[in-house]
Image 1 (cartoon, helix red, strand yellow):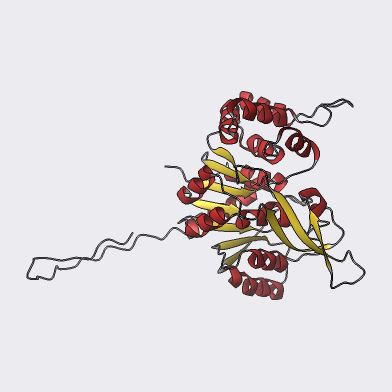
Image 2 (cartoon, rainbow, N blue to C red; image 1 turned 90 degrees about the vertical axis):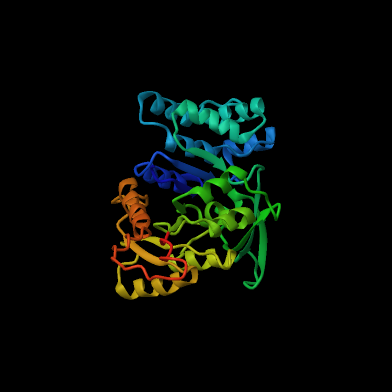
Length: 340
């Protein structure tokens, strides 16, 4: 049976992970953040009280089949209306998801139905069945540098000129989508990141049921660190800083490996420092060439190779058979149970 990969995130970062994962297996599940409040997603969320569809749409497009039919529908999903009217700026896929949700009264059923049209073998799931808000404590916006200001909304946080210290989800104890928890528990490999760190990556570990599933699953767990710091929420962040803030938001959270682009941490001294920092997550660091040359984007083929390495390193080789002579006992021969 093909391996099962679950990728958590949102936006372009999740698109990159899904583009890589589908090279390894058709059984890919995307678990997507649902806090976007900008652009078409924000408008539809406000007008129809639906999950923001933009990141969900992008995940569907990333997993669309490579048949002409699948690629055509991926293009249709991503097409945005022009002009200056009420439809201006809306991608067709956002409207389809909003309409399907109204007809089926179930966001997961709507995603599954559109996934069938696209020929997807895996699934796209919202991390939470209700839309969420993100709230952040941001420093550097007051005359007193010790003071923080509370900013609410994904777009406002992503574009702030201050320094994000901490984020929270509203409501504070959100439910997880049941199918998302099931997918994590059944996975062979779970991947968190890359993406907007405070608004697309960290929110997943703030949903209690998702966080518990990420710790309880027997899957290999990988964290993919961003190639560059993003203007706004993670300006001037080092790779170590990404790890520290994730750990601060989810004490006790663990992963098996952290994938870092080798070009981002060129010196051995910096690499050794990052290895020490990774121990916070009980993780090993894998330095790999995962970027697309000349761009700040992950290369799908290179990232796929790095993810396959994470999976293979978690596969223990079978123990060599050692002939033994059973030791007689009062009840006959006895042997140890085979190690699983």
